[in-house]
Amino acid sequence: MKKPANGPELILASKSPRRRYLLKQAGLKFSVIPSSFDESSVTLSSPDVYVRQLAENKARDISEQYPDSWVIGADTIVFIDGTILGKPGSQADARAMLKNLSGRTHQVLTGYCICRHRTGSRFSETLKTDVCFKKLTDREIDWYISSGEPFDKAGAYAIQGIGTFLVKRINGSYTNVVGLPVCEVVEFLINEKVIELTS
Image (cartoon, rainbow, N blue to C red; front, side):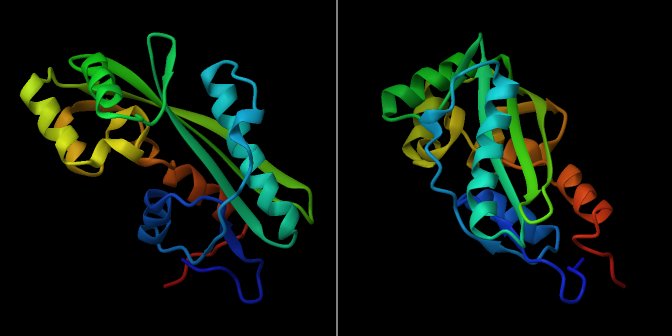
């Protein structure tokens, strides 16, 4: 896949290495320009609306600076028992999160927005994936925490990393759990002729 000759540039408005990896795996050519949007300015509402608003604001932030480009913004949260789990700030936080997720099903929601300021084009939605954890022993939790992987991940785990051993099954998009629903993003970009299929 590639963008048409002289077509608008594609920008990922995220510093997430996981989103960058997913788009590269899909064969896309793009620039990375992380948004500096203040997430605390968004009022916490229902999880699906909240995460979509975060994505929209991140995409809009970069799109206004690069009006001719198509910009992808995204945000991912982990949700269980009516609570959003962020990134753990300590070993105790990580342990509490993993104990809460152990043996249970939670939801991973990714909001994403694709927009182009010059044409006023914008599309956004939220995708949800159910993730079921195995029952974790204290030893497994301590070992995983000692790996250091949980500390920059929402919900204190990475399904695409060592944390793959925590997950018994999922219902929904795998890439959504990693951080971006690639199928839906690529489908939109093809339909809008932002990218084209080449042999």
